[in-house]
Length: 247
Ligand SMILES: Nc1ncnc2c1ncn2[C@@H]1O[C@H](COP(=O)(O)OP(=O)(O)OP(=O)(O)O)[C@@H](O)[C@H]1O
Image 1 (cartoon, rainbow, N blue to C red):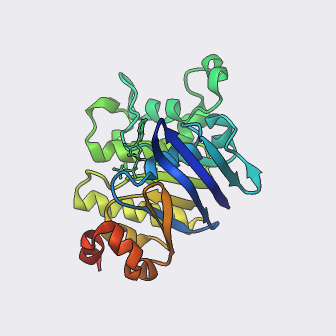
Image 2: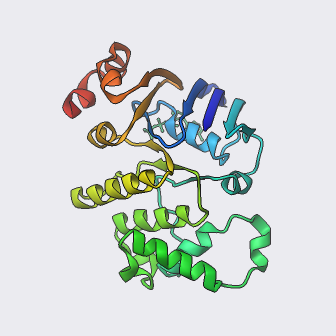
């Protein structure tokens, strides 16, 4: 469904992503893991085109997307979250979900505040995520975890085929973590393809069908969780630690 071919992103002399190639199968939960600074977020940014790649190609369902604008990519069915919530000031959760989901660029400036269709759709998603009770809360009063759920709702507004989740478990408490895992599983059961960057190895090992491992900008391993966990190159990149703890 998603194919990344020879992707490079250089910042001056830093090769953040360096000849990175991998694919994501339709209907899968695929994890992109790697030690700090491996290039995972930069790869995400290039795929969703929030960063312009230096070279390489990204294909979505047979269409090359690496030269498209981000909102065109969203329209083609690829949406992503950010490590840091993009909560908009002085807006309720419902307003945030709708405002963040608008993908038509400057044309959105001429749209009415919120249509009934958008409100119904956003409320349906807040219900799916179990957070209708905070629909009319000011977005800036939310806990860190609630913001993550709000961002997930905004992401789902565009009816994506594939979602890219950047550290969905980062900084959330254990019970919310289980809730987020449940939501990701349910979305995947409904046919949504998921690509996830996450440092929580326990979550990754439980949730993913396939794991792509990056180190120093490139892919060093790719396979099922049990294969990746035993891979000497991966253990070496991580110096053993986190993977052994998750075993
Ligand atoms: N805008 C930038 N300018 C210069 N260097 C950058 C920039 N963004 C990222 N880098 C560098 O690129 C490399 C890869 O960073 P990136 O954030 O993609 O890694 P990561 O695998 O997502 O790390 P982490 O797990 O810590 O989030 C790092 O060395 C980082 O310092």
